[in-house]
Image (tube, rainbow, N blue to C red):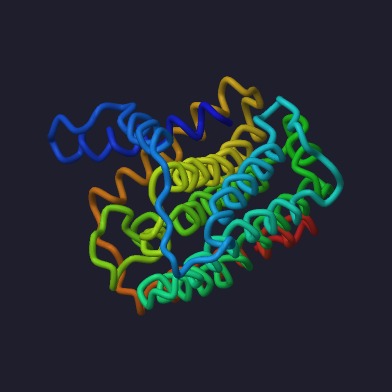
Length: 295
């Protein structure tokens, strides 16, 4: 999981550079940037309270706990219990709430605007996330990641297609959860159009480094879930799932960011609701296939 989290940003940068026909930044440039941030102190506004100071720690801690729940194909996770798919979702929700409250604690209208957008998008993407977990539970009969991805499943062709669609669903969810195009643009410098970045404008130094690391871990979680869904239908081994998770997200995000513009903010809600509709459709098709109903 650590390798996946550290490699995906590098793959995204290299993919963008390759498609743009330029040399681009080094593969490990994001690691160098975070190393510099971790060596710096933090500066706090006199307006903020202790909530603002502890939010990055909560954000990173929740991301680490969520990461420990995800198996890597045939490798067992460090934290596992019945129903941990629900705990995973709301552990990440805790991270989002901490950052939203910290943004509101600054008293800045820009950061409050970003917090409102983050809360809205989080509420809209949650049905897609839960329906995706329900689809996995429907096929495997468990509500724990370790049990769902414990061994290679003996799927027929129809169920294999549904599992591949579920993997595609989690890749789409990754775009929203990680704040990537076409929902958000991590490279923008205009506060009026920022979402995730505007909530972090007052953070600096080690606090900003922790927020960036937590973002990498969140991306790795959803990427590995998608990779596990694909690996469970064929080659269910960690040495297949890890490169697949890196390539699924790294290449897809790089291609999208090189070929598409960001959505208008008014269209983001439609885009996210469409992902939830796709999740419901995949679940419905899977349910009919489980009942051996031809469609």
